[in-house]
Image 1 (cartoon, rainbow, N blue to C red):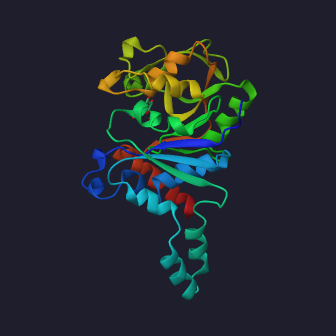
Image 2: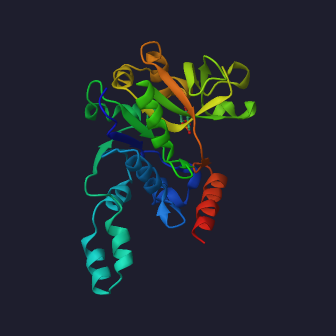
Image 3: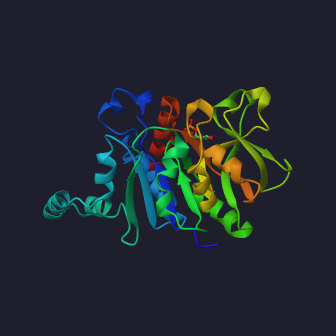
Length: 276
Ligand code: G1P
């Protein structure tokens, strides 16, 4: 299999839970201490060796594109004022060997649809990562995607990041069926999107990190709407499970659900206190 080089960041969502702030600021640009949420996701992908970052954007997401571009006026001003530390910070957001690619999701038809909008950028037999920036993970030394890469390379398989949830919470997530609860990494034998607690195949829930194969892209192109009337990434993963060995990693680290106000605040406190 080819090496993992590409990461897809679906960032087209409206961020309605953070209105009115998100009326003009994309939710991915809301800061956790001094860096926007999307910056953490991008850093995690680069740490795992990705050199092509694919952002699936929508309306009102110009700020995301501007953030990852150079800003010559600001750089000149910082240089003239001798603010060299700040200059380094704004210059080094993206290392020179990494390129950013932007594709639009013309309509909000679901996560699977968003990922599928990048299908033309993924080659046959090429693995790719999907990172949902709302799920911010402090891997405590080794980023979550890098931890997943180790499993991907060892098994030559697709890998999903998993957390063990309370039964009452499973209906907020994709939930997997596993071959053996004691096995590590967990071999995934089934996956369903947002099941009712009584229908959940386990309490292992999918967190917003995936290493997938191009088979999923092929499947997404013919997918029909599923849970919530949306085209689901989970359904495409389910459709290729019989052909693509897929493992789940109970990653080390702490996840913050920054799609919710409480998780966003907790992440700010967590990273803020780390800086003290
Ligand atoms: C998405 C996925 C879901 C996954 C979750 C992780 O759901 O569809 O399978 O468990 O992200 O955050 P969403 O949060 O977009 O509803």
